[in-house]
Length: 278
Image (cartoon, rainbow, N blue to C red):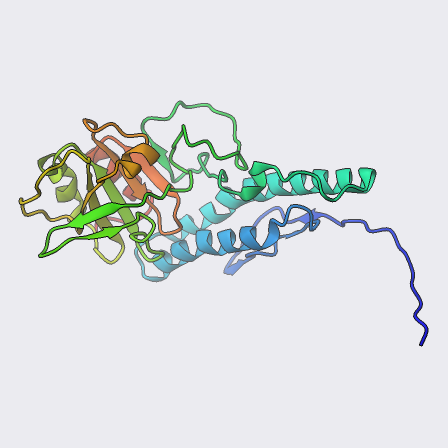
């Protein structure tokens, strides 16, 4: 049996849409034609779906205005644009040198992807006016609203008749926001937890995160979860000191939606998400 073999030049026909929605139609996971270099396509498609999914759910339930859906394009297009630039550069380099074993840049791990520039994220601690760097390298020394929320192991869940060890990632869900309240003592969380009572628990859950120095938790609390960071991993990952109070609102897609001082910041963030207090 004979086989015929033909050789042709491979050229990536890179294309990208200029918007991700039109009326009731949305483009998810296929808004571009990219080179295979870097292996970014599947992960980026999943990120698209996650970003849009929780917003669609809130609008469909009548909890958010349909204008929330416009932030899908606003948050994802800058990421996709940078991704195409990087993967095309990699492909061009491979085609030029013939070397397909070049080192993989940490930027392609996609852990530094962010939407710090988004209209619906709120950071009361960040320095304003920074340039957009949607496809950045993960910097564990910097945590801002719009970043992927860090994980932390060995978190002790206490109260309600028992205790067990969890990770922060095990607490987050795609159906609701998780509000992490870092406070030196449980009593310090009372005003923030009181404000959160105004929101439907099916879409907003609360977790008080106490420092490792906490000895005993006996006070009743309206928080959904009371956590003790027994080995300090959460305080380290979120760049917190034991004597600080700070609130991190984790969106259903695992992105930090807000980093605020307290009650007013929480209300301000959710006013940009929900139609009104539920």
